[in-house]
Amino acid sequence: MDLEDLRDGRVVVMKRYPPEFKADAVALYDSRSEATIKQIAADLGVNPETLRNWIRAAGAGRPRGRRAAKPPTVPVAPSALEAEVAALRRENAELKKEREILRKAARYFASETGW
Image (cartoon, rainbow, N blue to C red):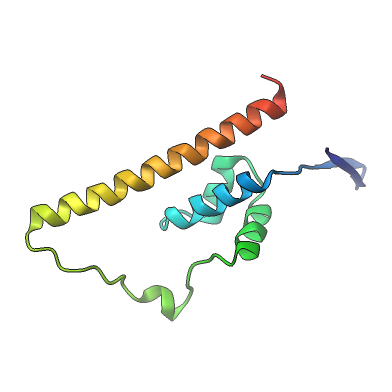
């Protein structure tokens, strides 16, 4: 159900999102360390502040300042090829997770628009 509010002569519609969608959006944020909240919100079609609130509510977040400057600790691989394979597997898993989240978002928005 949409709630309407009158602000500055404009009608503002507040959408309600299912908990699964919110959890998937937070998971997408966690899985894409290089992306910003603004980028992910644009991908999902939600307001960046809404996504930021979901992330805070979930207790998720990324370290800022000095904590962010620390490079992640990665175990040393025996060979360069094995390290590359491991990196590609991680990237593949991340892309599969992102794809599934975006599919769910597309299904949700398609049901909202009546397509």
